[in-house]
Image 1 (spheres, rainbow, N blue to C red):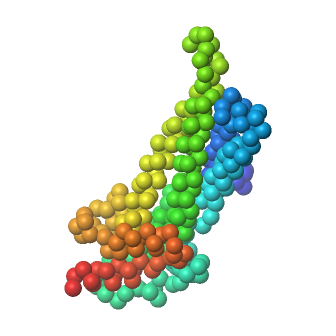
Image 2 (image 1 turned 180 degrees about the vertical axis):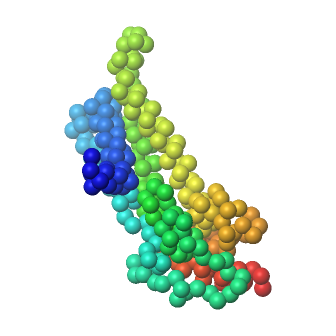
Image 3 (image 1 turned 90 degrees about the horizontal axis):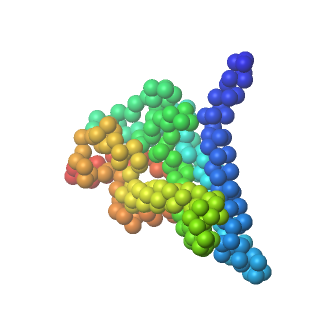
Amino acid sequence: MGRGSEEIVRSVFRSGLWVRAAHTVLTWSITLVLFLHDTDLRRCEQRGELLLPVLFFLLVVLSVLLYFAVSLMDPGFVLKDALRYSHGSLVSLERHMIPDSSMPRLRRCGYCLLLQPMRARHCASCGHCVNCVGERNHRVFVLYLSVQLFTLLWATHIALSGFSTAASWEHWFRLHVFLLGALSVVGVFSLVVLILLGCHLYLASVNSTTWEFMSRHRVSYLKNMSDEENPFDRGVLCNLWTFFCLCRAEIWERVYYKNSNNNSA
């Protein structure tokens, strides 16, 4: 295999192509099982009542489209010692630095050698420094989790409606083996998505990133603060309003400087 081919293979794996393909195949396989077995969906089709089957199908399509939107869109990559700001335009970090000795010094990434804006961290999966751990696609990710959770819970209800009695356990298992497998996968994913959604709603409500929450003692601009202190927290309502309703990125160095000065005053 030549060098060019190796680069293509590494690029394919790095881009998450196989993960997206597996997610899509698994989603439509489970959907097919739910439609082919004697579930509420199948019974509605047989009676000519197509509203619920069509709605469920469209909900699955929406969840897949949101998954691709989250995984393919720019999460806020740091480019050329700059950060994304104000609807995608690039603003130089140096122009917005605060000349104050109390401000933590920004560091250069050991992998990209780029000057990292505050709240950015290098992602080993995509090979880039990401601004605010996905600042640009975080709300879309939460929307995806919400739609996915509703779809999974509905799929659980549909799967349960397809089980019926049989003469023996062996016959029952052969009759429902695919439905049982679909229910098991849906149940596990429902729990995972519920936990993820709860965690990210909490992080949004306190204006914290996953890295800041999990590794606070290692974050240069937080490790000297108490556990209850968050220089980016503006209150639950304001945090949620900013997260869901404002389509712009923040210059976190200025927010940090402003809130730190207010707390020390």
